Image (cartoon, rainbow, N blue to C red; front, top):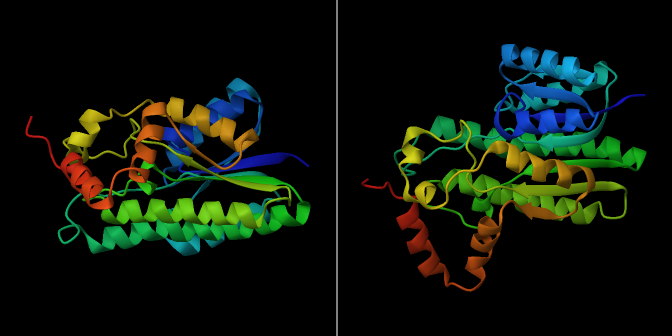
Length: 260
């Protein structure tokens, strides 16, 4: 039976570049995103270039029921998922009292609730087989929660804590759970408002292919969590030595909009 790696948020950014790099390694793929046209084009591209099997399923995972439906459709198609990449995610920027509550609740459902659903359902199947790999995409902000990204930072902190604990529970079972923690990435994630923040000018976004390369390596053979990039690794460890109140003042300054 053919094995597949399922990637959410696969139509662009990190997910798209991971799909390409996994295809280069002759891995069969199940691609999940909201945009059917993009998914169809990626399917044609990868099957033509790499002669692998690629399925796609159109789902909006900001609706938690769709995560459950996705699992059911994978079973109906009789596709064996041996690798899962929970990459789909969104973020908002701004003062918490000014931002949209509806958008933030959808963000929580996408970044947390649907991720938990997919981990739960696919991990059970992997556990029965005694093998499988799951990678959840967290963020540098899991270590450095930033003002003006309050809900997004909190969702990524959840993802990292959840991944660490799930990995411990499944240790020795053959099911490996890891967390990829990128810093700023040059994708459609950043709105015009986000790009005005000093932190983006200080720690410039990297190409998603660089993050995808680290992600593919972690997914296929790594353990634990991986902060992508030396500078981001250094930043993730600063809170260990700098007092919280000082750190928060620094982060608030960096998250504020630049005047230039």
